Image (cartoon, rainbow, N blue to C red; front, side, top):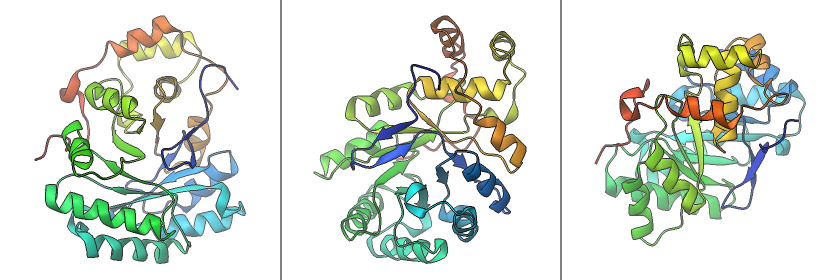
Length: 275
């Protein structure tokens, strides 16, 4: 393994989370990708209730033959299920769909339901965690103001904030706040949905004899983020993890950092500015 990156991180909850995860958004037949990922070293799968594939992720974990306790599984509660009782119900339904006794991480999927519902949902996740149904809890698409409202309510901090984060949309204020608070930043869309024609990315990839995809995920890891590259292609799933035999120099990291366009560089819904 290459120096200067770690492969896992200890969350505020005390549990270890593998930094590299497999995203399964819009993968309605995710069993082959998940089984391949698990057989080739991945130990982290990021799902959500809205993705509609919790059942298949659970099947893939059992099919892999790898003990459940060695795999970090995430799901998320969508805005339509926010609120105290509905969030508790969502946790139970997700456990049933996966066929698991617990989930390693459960996130509020977005802040779109409004402050009152967000805080109710957060209290519900704390209760589910205290009941042993969840090991860690966090949020997704939260801006600093949403994270601050949790603190102002006197509630514990999230272990994780999952946001769109890639060279063109680096979410620097959010990332800096989370780092200062010990909140791990998970990066979705790390592969910029295959838009690999940028000259800087092409140049850096050529220099290290790697694909642009490798450079993008390695850049994320070297910044200390938890990237969640997604693919339904088993061969690409294997390739995306070929990250530990090279290191991007500080000079080349700076070149990639300079690609940041702020929020204009987002390629997903990125609802970080909702009230």
